[in-house]
Image (cartoon, rainbow, N blue to C red; front, side, top):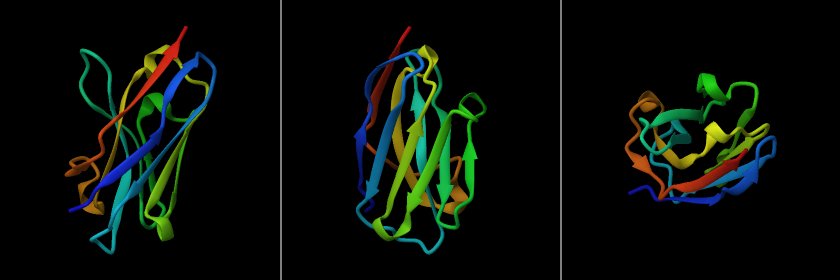
Length: 119
């Protein structure tokens, strides 16, 4: 069973930056994907950014150019640098992980980290 431990998040004013980290207890696949989805109140969950073990990244349209995902395979850890934050980025951010074929339907989820951006 994969356990995902998140850190980071919090409260920031619009235009500010935050960094999220996520460490996986174990990686059971030779090719895997890790990253973040988010869910705001009253909205559907959406992909924020993911990265495969091979270094391929995929970003949601709303965060392209502002967020950067990176990974450390040796530590089973991924990072999400969030810059130029907007109030609409306010949401609970969930770390996800699975084999790389399941980018859009990951089975392993972290506990969630609240990110709040004030205007």
